[in-house]
Length: 302
Image 1 (cartoon, rainbow, N blue to C red):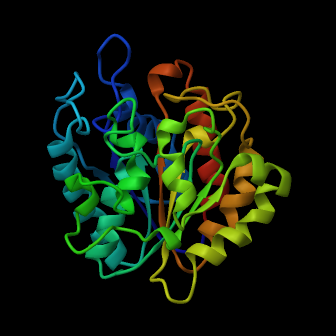
Image 2: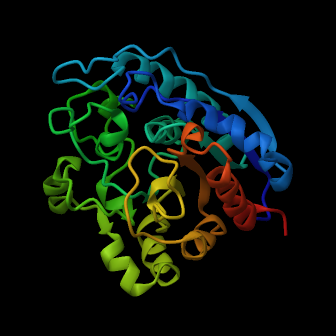
Image 3: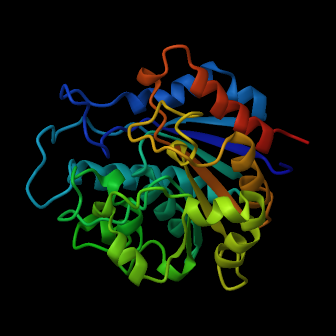
């Protein structure tokens, strides 16, 4: 990476369902773990601190709505303010989550910085394309890609006021392995203009080779740059078990790096976010260390 890097923590668990015992998940601890493992110094980055959400409210799922909807609107706005500031400074932004719902604040921030139309490379083990009525959990994390492209009547699908945060034909979804879970919005995904590259397809082609296909979608000349969403559960569960919904199969760390390296080094890449790592499921921090090593290998100064 030959650009200055700025890090923002997004210690949010309000976009995901609680544990089975009813407690909020510990994804809010992830940014602190990455820092303790030395990520900031290893990247030579400027640490901009955290954007902290309101407390978890909807421990019981509200009928027909997303959990913590008003809190999510407020948090997306606060995160957008921070991301917009970094985008205006032309720094490569890294947003450390937290749950997947932070993609809404990240994209909104790029809009506020004057990037009226951006591409989105969405690397995830799940489609995240449900509506509040389709989702089994009511978690924004299960529907945040759908919300980002305006697929819902929720206010979270209209954060910017004049249309969705991203257009389906500017999005590449890579690595999902959730065909056995149709409640992630598969029927609508298949009918949409989103470029859907599930692991069953990418694994045969090779993650390095598919990078060009992704860039053809998200880094076109008519776009104002692109954002990278990296959900840790895109990795094989054998490599990354410390996530809320691990899926078998998927790339290993080297294969994922082959895909990410051309993306993060592309001149139109605006930044990326890392989500869904749960330190409570990683007592010896093996998984956290793997993620820090992945980012260091991709982004450390040349």
